[in-house]
Image (cartoon, rainbow, N blue to C red; front, side, top):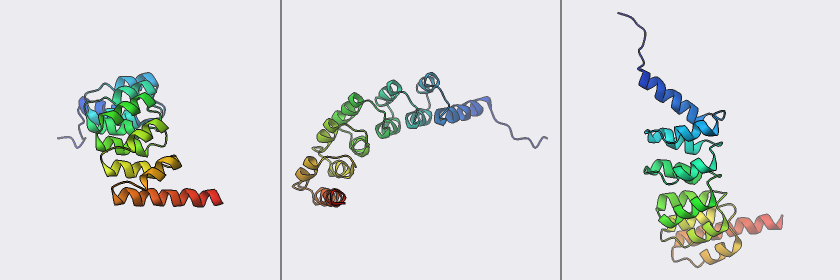
Amino acid sequence: MSNVAYSSPVTVTVTRAAQAASASSTSGDDLATLAVRDDPAIRATVASNAFCPASVLAELARDEEAAVRSAAARHPHLPPSSMLAMARRGDAEECELLAGNPSAPSGVIRYLAKHADPVVRAAVARNPFVDMGNLEKMLEDADPFVRATASGALARLTAAARR
């Protein structure tokens, strides 16, 4: 009997697909091909790839698997229209990730600042590009955690402006 480990062709194919999905050298066309694979882990890895084309991200933002959508929500190149569509769907976890995305446009941030979940509103307050107007409104939020987070963010902005 041989001591050589056996890898099935399926395992090798999945491993290569996962490697390609995460590689910075993988072309946009290849990422688009990988984005439609059955394996949600591969699709999520594609959505996390820094070089994933915006059109592919837009599709992945509508994926049936939450992990794939979450990976897309974090991506700074997710198109603004896809960010707004995700925000409007209202899933708290995805909205929290969108609120933390430094590329989220001001309209998406304003929308998320009114989300029913205080964790999402606090994530808005932590966004490094949230505007003072939103932060000031959040100081009057019904939730004490959101108020405290907004207060801390305002204090940091004010201190930075004094420097």
